[in-house]
Image (cartoon, rainbow, N blue to C red; front, side):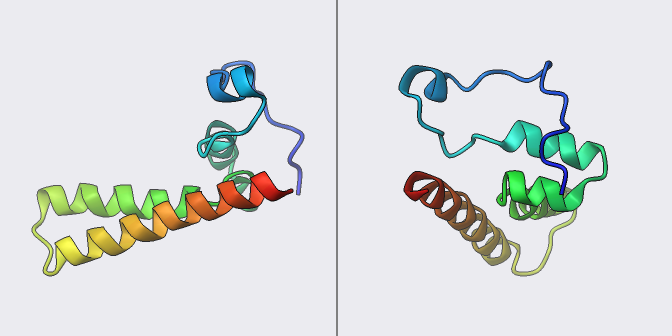
Length: 97
């Protein structure tokens, strides 16, 4: 795991963290995307665990836009709940550490 070697010079600062000193639920997503672009899939997960459920949700939404998928509404709901649950759980774990 190489969580220190990411170029963050292009990234936007988190205003929530800047103003309050606390991470927001989205803190880490930019670095996680940077890891994904460099092929560091495990590091991307450890930086922001919600990246993969979010990726699956957006991929499914894209396919469902063009192709009507049977039970698509249920699948979208389940993927959205998994994504939100992962993000909230990660945020709560960060708060307690």
